[in-house]
Structures are given as structure tokens and as C-alpha cells.
Length: 200
Image (cartoon, rainbow, N blue to C red):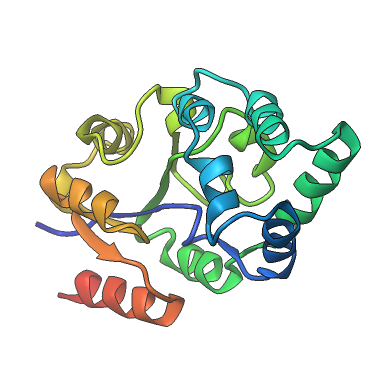
């Protein structure tokens, strides 16, 4: 069956943490082990609840402040400095734009409830035909339902879509519902694999 759409994860694919110096500085300052701050920020119970829309971003940061014993001004500085390490993958965004209008495009992202507003300059309907955020849906990857909701909104069958993610579990989740899938390791590799599937 002909491929009609290509869908992407955001964190690690469309948005990448390109400058680790600030992050590592905070880990060292707080005496945390490698990936300790990542665990507190993204894998704590309140963070998992935020991913499902059951907690706010402010509640996540409040928990970070509590676990790291930070004063409000210190927490605000940490937040600003950590977010500053992220950059948009402009090469991939330009590639996505090149796919239109021949192919539909979309996003399936595990993201907190403020993601749509916070990312609207890049993640918007001018670039993507469908945008599915876990916090808005109350489910996250690799739950089959989150892929199916994106496919339903696009009006296509699973085998008519490619999904790109940097996590193997999420790629396998897409394959289990019948989508083609690409594990992202770097931008040239991902683009090459997408083009191979599109031209195959």
C-alpha cells in the first residue's frame, strides 16, 4: 500500500538537547549521579502524571525543587538554563516541509499539557496535518491507541504511515499497530531511511 503520511516524535528527533554543559553543571552542583537530574525531571511519578495530563508543568518543577532542595529563585534559574540547551532540528523540519504537499505530516509526542502553547512557533498546523500530545489524550506511547488516534485524524490506514522516534519501545509500538517505523539515531540516517521507505 502506498505511504501517505510521515509522523514524528518531538523530543530527541525534532527537538534535541544540543548543549549539555548547563545540565551537567546542575547535576554536579546537586551531587547527582549521571542522568540523576533527568530521572527527577522526566521519570518521577509527578512527571509521569504530567505526561498523561494529570499534573501541571508547575507541579513537576515544584517536585524538582523539593527533591533538589532549591529555593524558588534557584529553581527558576535551573529551569531557564536547562530549557536553553534545547534546539530545534532545523534540518529535519526543512525535510518535513519538503514532504508537503505530496505527503501528510504529523507529530505524536509524550508531552506535558503546556506543550502545544510552548511549541506553537514550530509545532503547528502550517507544518503538520495532525498533532497528538499525550497530555491532551490521556495516553502515551507505546500505547497502541495514541498511534491509532493520529491515524484516524489523518484518515489513513497504519500501513500508509511512517513513524520516526528515538526510542525503540515507541518504534516497536508503531510497528505493532501496522505502521512503518524508523528508529532515529541522527538526522541524515533518519532521512535516508524515510526516503527509502517512500521510494520503495
